[in-house]
Image (cartoon, rainbow over all chains, first blue to last red; front, side, top):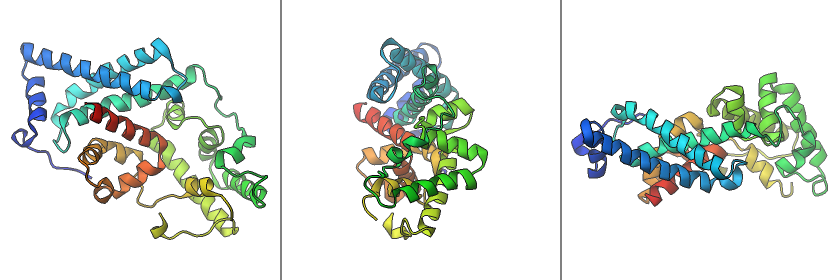
Amino acid sequence: MECARRPVQDLDEESAAWLRRLVAGGGEQQAAESELHATLVRIALAEVRRRSASTPVTGPELDDLAHQAAADAMLAILPKLGDFRGESRFTTWAYRFVILEVSSKIGRHYWRNPPVPLDAGQWERLPDRLGVDPAGHAEAAGILAEVRRVVEEELTSHQRRVFTAVVVDGIPLDALAAKLGLSRNAIYKVIFDARRKIRRALVAKGFLEELGLEQW
Amino acid sequence: MRDLGRLERFLRTDPRDVGCEEAMAVLHVYVDVVAAGEDPAGRYPGVAAHLRACGPCGEDFTGLLSAVADG
């Protein structure tokens, strides 16, 4: 999904101005950096407030997190100005850094006061997690037993740990990634493969029907 | 099979799903396409599939789109 870099003269006017000012040197560059930082702080504060309902971080700590995210985004952006290819507006490219910093920092903050510890293994919550109510489905017990069998017999211990933490215990994916020192993508891939294996097993047992691509 | 919608949705794995790393690498481009009112799924079907399935990346998409809209 590589995109060719556009010459600066082909960028939209605002993006070209940002790039020119951020490498101008002297007072003009300092002013541009201050302006960019202030913008990133504003974006980060709005983002942590947007996410506040889904994070245990609150009040001044949330504002601190936003300021740290903006500062870290600045440190990431400035050495990478040469990587900006112009396939989006400059500000969208820059805002992406701060949004991803907010995500990552909220994930790490989870472990300051985790509502669920790692390896809790709350299997009794699986029906609620998967929306399979034993009272409402004649096949519920069979479905839940098959899910657990796949997790215990067909996943490696690492895959089992990841699946149990995210799906069974409801630990946020970014929090688990931070705890295990893995990327979000690595955790997602484990869950993705587990979902595929479980679906295949439930289809083989007749609990679910096979899907064609047109049904996605 | 009755009312297993949530389980069905959770277990569906779209083979076009590009994963978090690739989706996040082009998120800024994808968001600008959306902000311009164009069809992002036509241009980036694998990213669209991923954003539908991955909660954290979907949150980042919503956050970046909101940041761009608020300017």
